[in-house]
Image 1 (tube, rainbow, N blue to C red):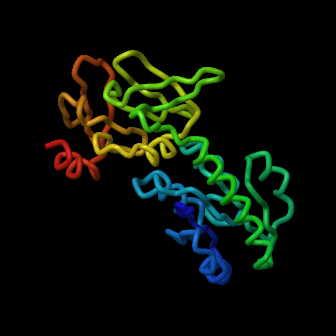
Image 2: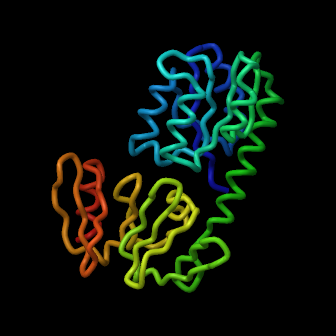
Length: 244
């Protein structure tokens, strides 16, 4: 089963050390970064590396940006991102759950209590992954909107775009919206024609017409389609190799 990519955010090095030790016994939790405050978290989530994050374990009382505010900012960018708060403050529990936190763990950190919260996170994330498995054996992308299911041929797709809380699929037959996350769709696109060019875009390389520089990014244009996708500078070299 795919690992849960996790970030730990706490300004207390002792807490980070304890949590890291406990997490090391859980093979499904892949700790990819340890950060000291909410500002570092926001910077990480908005980077290309942040696209891979599934779960954040966050303290609340941190300098610069506290855990609650960091949650609001990060989930605005990544609505599917999951949070567990691990803090010395009991006062924020109600607010944390209104932000859809998976769990709220009060320090001192107890191993079994942490494992209970992480088990909830693993089950929730894996269930969402199962629900969002959107590629069928017939080479179609399956997206749902309300009570309607659309079966979209892969070769008709120009690009897939994250737009707020929705994911938008741009195709030759029209535009389709779904609540499935871009990350979930990307994890099921087992097709070399599709490449994630930016944290908000997956592009069908077969339908690309041109690429042009535009400020700090690049614009991708498609044959016979007016909308454009973006490609980050970090991805342009890999993109050029793949499209040849």
